[in-house]
Length: 265
Image 1 (spheres, rainbow, N blue to C red):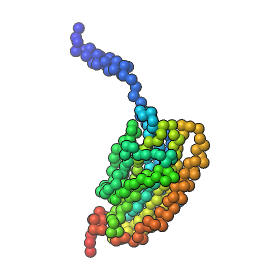
Image 2: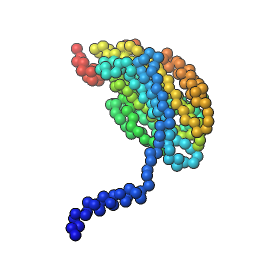
Image 3: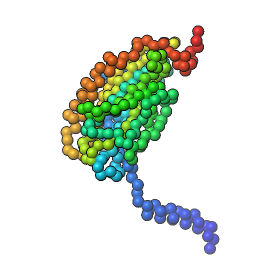
Image 4: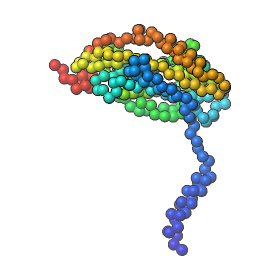
């Protein structure tokens, strides 16, 4: 018998045997809620997804992640108009929610390019398109636990740099809550859009939006709680547009002139 002829068949049978005896591996996370909303001025679209770890390896805690997307809804694909400032606040109930272990993107610091990075948190994983320029991140706990990002295309000296994202940018954080807790989240985003006039950025629009998501292992009315949380986070951030306000007109830096192809006169 020609053994060479049967080798491919043996390989196929061996592969089938391995598949049959190997236990099936399922995804360790799932999207349990999502939401989206356009801003008051239809300049920005805000969307989000709430992920839950389904591995249940920790009997004391449940693990979640939130992914938030801020999108340019009006000036998309424009090379001369874009967001110069984005502020994102994710509020979570119960307020005992904690980023343990620490895992969020983008992290604080200077990002020279917008690019995709991998996010991973306790069995939950996905890609995130992070913004560029100057990123700050912090947390605060009051009536809820807040995960906050602030992204600015403005240098501390208020010399212009560049738009913080092209078309869209994403933000993500993980958190844990006591086992079988009802989870409510709301995300608030505010942005300022500028247009480049030769060597000057001029503010032409601003917008804000809010969304809400929840997951309820215990029976609970979601409508009122999520909408109450959305109202609270809007109230909590109502002054962001007044106290932040970037200069109406910003002279761009030499770096920005170079990026825009503008020659010094």
